[in-house]
Image (tube, rainbow, N blue to C red; front, side, top):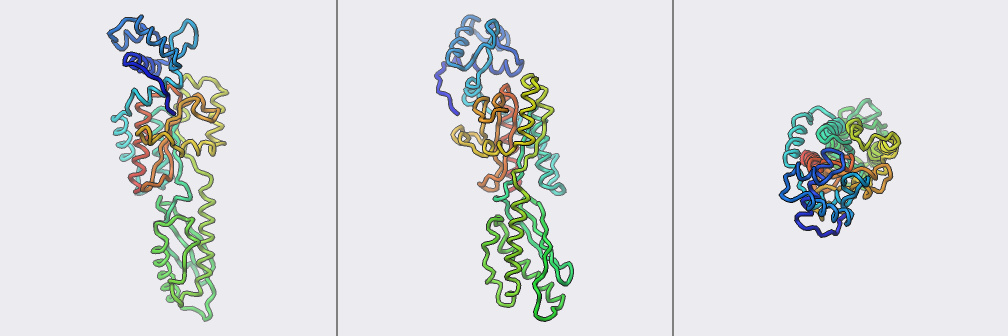
Length: 358
């Protein structure tokens, strides 16, 4: 969302200082505080005049007639889009922690994402939301058929996110009693064929394969493989729906004064615990990300369509396999957010996950 407001250099400086001071103190900002804190080379009267203009165009407002001013959602939007850059130091810090603390050799992918969410929430001080990969984008890395007894075989698959699935099925009956060694050899050929055909394919493609390439000696496996792929596709589709969220840092955000009202906290918790599906369009649809030159979507206050978070900021980015988005990384906190750090942390975490999945 862009705001068309023309500000001169002094007005931009006053807006930047007002937002920055309010983020640090959570107290309405007066002109004297800006003169003292930011050593501006102009008088309090000049700053008051600039603040008056910023209030007139809707970027600041007075919560009480006798109080100083605080940023509006539009004021935060100008601040984020025009007056700051993401913190390079925060990006380096989170990348280092992710690299040091996540054990890609031993942990499941869900555990890795949970660890990433915990690091993100600790560094940001806000709620971190990381989603598991979308089912329709998950692809196969490895497949193996193993005979468990004379009449049954187990299919074991490993996905590109290192999740495993297994299915136990009856072998098709042979006209003559088959030699176990022959069956083992045939299953190995089938495993090699399936791995070659399926590696890198999404689950939605599993039922579209042509088994005729196997040759006549494997005709008896045709219906077995068709059933197997159908069952596998169905199993995997059901296991990852709806989109799974890994959430960390709820206790972190409750320390902020904006969340002192019990009713608001209850609404946010209900959204996170019971209505997560409502967040999915927000964290995957990023219409402003490319136009701003950043890899994040930033929804500030009233820009959020969901009532429970209309006083919050949601910063989101996707992590990708190649150029295809498969999951998301987000932080949720008050609009009074340290945007330079939060944007950098989300961008860097999503970038790290994309790199290790490529």
